[in-house]
Amino acid sequence: MKKIVLFVSLIASITTFAQSKTQYGFRVGLNNNYSSIIDNQTDIISRFRPDLHIGGFYRFNLAKRISLQPELVYNNRGGSLKGFSANFPETNNAILRNNFQYVSVPVILGISPAKNVFFEVGPEYSVALNAGKKYGPDANNDLGLVLGARFDMLDAASLFSLSFRYVYGLKDISNDTFTSTSLNKVNVPLDMRNRTVQVSISYNFSDYYRWWSKYGIKKKKK
Image (cartoon, rainbow, N blue to C red; front, side):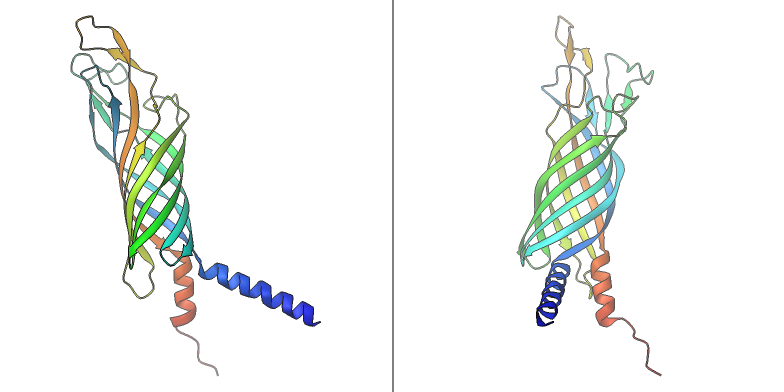
C-alpha cells in the first residue's frame, strides 16, 4: 500500500512539475512578404506585400532564461513581382501577386537576456498547400531560418506576448525562367526565395488557467 501511495505521489509531483514548466496557446499576426531573387539578371523587381499568419504553440521552459517552442502555423507568403520589359502571362499585365500558402513548423529556441524579453532563433520547415498551382510556389516545401525577439507582457497573468521575427528562406521555390537584361536576351532561371517580416500576438491558454485557479473568483460556501 505504501508503495502504491509513493508511486501515485511521484506521478503527481512529475505532472505538476511538467505543467509548471510548459505553456501553450495560439498566435496570430501580420506577414510582410517579398520574394528575393538571387543574382537577379532580369528587370523583375520584388515588392513587399502584407498578409496574415495564424497558429498554435507549445513552449517548454527548460530553465529560467531558456525556452524551446515548437509551433504549427498557417502562413500566406509570396509578395509581388513587377517586370518592365515583359508582362507576366498569368496576369496579362506587369505585376504578379504571388499567393504562397504554407503550413509551417518552426522550432524556436528562446534565450532571455532580461526579464520578460527573449531573443529567438530556430529552423522553420514549411509544406506548400498550393504548390504548382496558379500564383503558388513551384517547390512542395520550404526551409527557413527564424530570427527575432519576444516580449512577454507585464500583466498580472502573463497571458500575452508580442513577437517580432524575420524568416530567411534558404530554398529556391521557383522553376520559372525569364528573359535576361543582357545583350543576348537569353532565358535565365530565377532563384527565388521567401523573405518574411512577422509581427504577432500570442495568447497563453495555460497561463490563464493557472491564473484563474489562483486568483479567480471562488464561490462562497453555503
